[in-house]
Image (tube, rainbow over all chains, first blue to last red):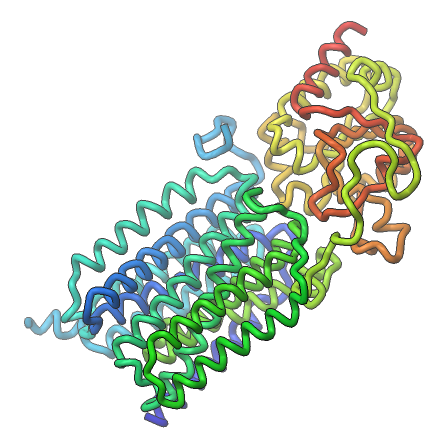
Length: 104
Length: 472
């Protein structure tokens, strides 16, 4: 048990350093998309829902986890899509014809 | 079980797939920090996520799972998430991110609760599982409710101005103490589910109360903070579930989100501490027409007068803001500019870095309305020009033109880079009402003797000016 938690803590600390390093200096224009992109990545909690439902028993636990999986999916799918839409605005030449994703 | 499925269901295989996914997350994030590679970076991270999800579905731990339930959750999430992301207006992006962040935090809190139940409430047996679970429950719940409030504020469902909570700091500390206290009791061996629910509820109220006092202008920083929180809570859930993917991805987001929050706050000339302790803009009351704190009076004007003023100008600078985006007035503005150019008047657009509440937003809106790219001027290029500008037309912008940022050292926005509109010879401000800006602070520009206000919907006001110009 101790070795498991130590391994996990080692991974945790290394991941923290990676996270600190990977975002060095970001231009202001990319703050919102980057926030949205990292937001999509923590949708990884979806996996937590999947793993947990494997050993869940009882109605309430399963209900909670189905909601958690749905929430996680919204986080992942919505997060990546919305980031993609934001970033498409940075194209140098916007498409002459709006592709239906813009405001009416 | 065939040999092939045995191979894919092997824990080593799944871990290897996770490692591939991590590499893609890290590469994707690195690419997201540069405009030329950002689109690609986002896609790489998304593929990484797909790999991680597919690998997890192969996990032998899921053998006993009811795959109908899993499919149900995935389908519901997709049905809700895809249209929400596709249909959200560009002006409403920040609150959409808040919402997506919130559900992530909610998922963590729910997973923690379900795990608590699966362990029969006994978290004292293995503290390496128990402590992260309690942490995940607290932070996940704060993130869920805090994000919802941030969404409500940006969406206009809740007042965007700071809501003062009596003895707010004391109440918040008490709530946090209650949540931690209940957590400690559980870790010491109490198996009460009621106590666990108390953790979730106390953290929920804390999430609500800590975001409510923060003004709308600071919301991007709040969302970014909660984003980092959700990442941390996901990492904690990962330790409890002994899942590398959650630990790594969650912690990377927790760390990079913290750095990003810091950079965002600096770009807005705010510190994270002052944002989270709230109170921004609560001091200056919103002015309802007439005299303001500065003692000046507001002069209102008509579209016909503005048209005359513009017709005799040599250079006109348009300052578009969030109000123009909301009113969808960019096409009307372009028409007006065409009418002016026909008269030989030079028209330029002054784009503040955070105009429209989303960096880069204004450029796109104007580009869609066929405004020539070379007329869009960045703040540093246009500021020296205001001195020789005859008329500045401020359309739905407020805080980014507030001269207090330059002149008044005790102003909450002092030091924020602004467009020096007040240096031009005449200023016309198109505005719906005298309500204060997003930051909730007063703008002395409106009381300046060079300034005239044209009240009304930006789109129809501009259209009116254009038709008046036609008659001149």
